[in-house]
Length: 172
Image (tube, rainbow, N blue to C red; front, side):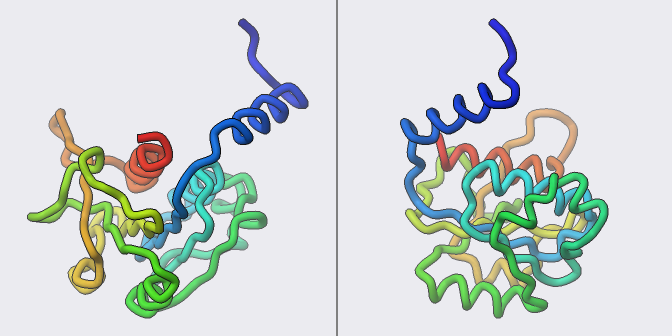
């Protein structure tokens, strides 16, 4: 066994993508994700998971930004994204394209992420690191999913939680 680098790595991933085409279309909406390192991580994650578009809203910082660019490895230059100040306006636009809005949030009626039936066109919505998705944004969502916590912590970092749900949808 040896690690893959350079051309060997590119060929390996190309061949895997050809043999395992993901179904469905995913978009992600960041509702006031405040910390640039999280935004950069989400750009890199979204690119890796084959997200078609990233929508930044509220106080979410936007590229170009030194931390977003460094952490995200400049994926903001290849992944389609745009900024919309009001998340409800962004949700209306995404819904008009046929997407269902699914919040990744702890709510009283949230379903465990691994038990939810995701529609073919899903927009995952994540919120602020401390406050989560706002009540107004939740009211515009079709459903909410959560990640069960088995330790003493009440939640995971926003980009980690999003990664788990995105890759579950891709391979669940």
